Picture 1 (tube, rainbow, N blue to C red):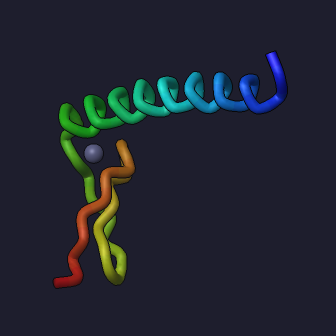
Picture 2: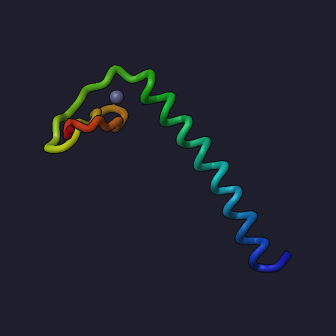
Picture 3: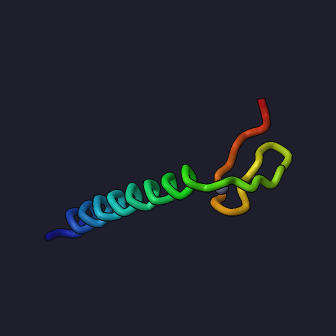
Length: 56
Ligand SMILES: [Zn+2]
């Protein structure tokens, strides 16, 4: 395997891992009873870090 193939394989592995982690976070956030801290442009949940824009 040359270096480019190794890097491509690594990128694919990380992409799969990234998707898995994002799904875990989305699940956690969908099940969270949010406790928002209000910022200037957005509100962020203290528990799951879900962010909602308050800037329209
Ligand atoms: Zn939350």
